[in-house]
Length: 405
Image: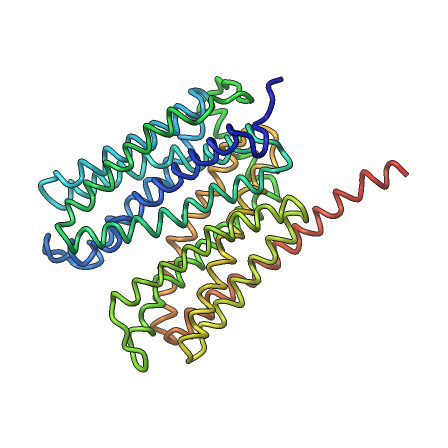
């Protein structure tokens, strides 16, 4: 059996950088058009709701095609599909600036989302297959930190370049940068050594998905993924409303700077991933969920400084919890890992769509307090689910020792 990628070796850091950059490209391309929604509304003479479809169709395409991409990677290999995903989505993003009308732009966004699906779930499976088992949590944390950096810089680069030039220039620059990163990724990511080609049919894939969905631990982790991403999107979708109203009256530019808090996720995902390797997934995931709950509650304060601390604590908890939960999913199965991870991300993005939209109704009901009620309620459910998982994990650890006695 070939050796795993050894911690702190040259290959270890080169592989981590490649996966980090791939994660960066995925989230930069997925969310780069978010700051452009008002511009699309004005340029194409459409409503803000229609303009926001440039984000929605991409995330929908990613969620729907993720399961198929994980099946395809079992047949064609991890590195090949991940490279095609990065390069293909970069090319579709480049083509989007050439489209003659809004509907063709949406088509390119949909195709970009479908292509992007080939990276996230497969990258998680690659990490769990190729790295030393005792250090997977830290590697997963480094990978997830690319999500926060990509989500931040994708939005900021697009905003700045659009102010200086045009939105077409901004998207072209980001897509060409992503293409270059795709090439570097292909040249530097090691080929899989612990992956074996599976020739299972699509029907067999559906049966394996059914098997994962009958696994109570996995379903619990999928539910937690739904909860943490849904809570995160709900908070960031609507936090601008109280901040742009009295007594703050902040401008859109100042509110946009809130995304700098994402940088906390670069640290927390890696830090909490390493803690999970030492102290167990259940305990550290509970800490992440409790941080989110505390942070959301602090945003109810009138003081802007307390609100800022609340956002920081909430964001720290989110990226840490996502890192631990996604790693725990892959650790919980011995076969069809990529499909297990794909199901986690499917629930994760469904949570984004459902709870992100539901937050608007709670905002109309009780203002920002209503949104926090939704977030704290759903996070409390997540904590209860994880407590159950934590005790299950402890029982399984103690059983072998009792059998020896």
